[in-house]
Length: 125
Image (cartoon, rainbow, N blue to C red; front, top):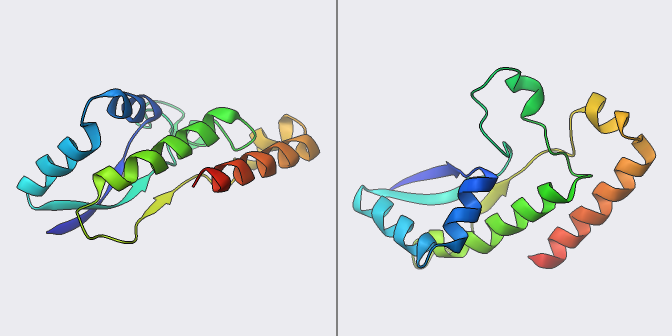
């Protein structure tokens, strides 16, 4: 098996979580191709092949509940995506946010909100 990382946009993660057998079915299809998921990339929230990619890839930042909900959804999906017997895996996510965007919305407030959402996400795990 070739270990891979899988990027799921928020929309794709939502659709996969709502489908019956979605995570396990995807895992089995990938296994048939000799692939096994070991990490999920939750950094880009949506399509990151358009214009203004470098800036938009940081949206939404961690002071926005959409970032926390997306990361929590990925955490819920991950166990079904892993091959049986796999005990460790990871999810990569945004490092709080792009400084300019993050601080435009009120640096102190953004940091406080982001901290609360990160704590909520950790409790969700």
